[in-house]
Length: 268
Ligand code: SAH
Image (tube, rainbow, N blue to C red):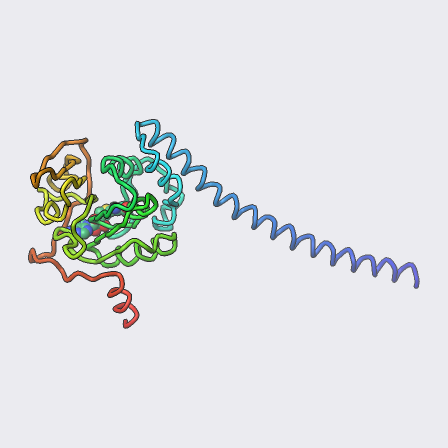
């Protein structure tokens, strides 16, 4: 073999090797990139729990653990994903918002939930609050009035491993009578008065956390406790939530459960 052809052969081997090396390098960069992407949210989440929740007095281990585990970034639209752990609310479409992490923690903690307790949420929105409750081991039922939000929350809950959460599209003012009574009710949109159907659906000793007040003004986050069949209320803090809306004629739109929604959408 001439020295030229040996050099040519080596050249080819070198090229193949450098091609392989490039491919391996690219795969490594991608892997590290993905891992760092995940790390990014994991560390933002830990910071959020320490700086926004623990530092402001959230003490419930169950709430802190749940909010350390639930990936909030999976419940917000792509356009605001990088801001998932911001100390404030974020837009989720349809003019609605996902609440500030601290408000989610405060409301959840105020309910003094026990594992296995049946909880009703009014205003599924992104599905994040429902996932936090599910992660704490509660049996969660959640109602959303805006159909498109209800559907995307359903998908996000399933994707994040919270398929046990029961969801419905409809007017939450009426509650979920066939699943009542509930140990706790959390309302994440603000009516101007406490809806009586919700009080009726609390069990004796049950608690409800609800913002009450006029639209687009400061409302009062209120704790309602049912004792001896009577309603006791306690004002917590001033808050600002999106309003609890009703269907235009005041009647409740037909309730659609997640299984019914799935049948409807597969028929579209
Ligand atoms: N808990 C949500 C925050 C939702 S914002 C989360 O974790 O992302 C409040 C939601 O309440 C909005 O999605 C709004 O559409 C919904 N809502 C308003 N009025 C309602 C009603 N009467 N019944 C059910 N949902 C209602």
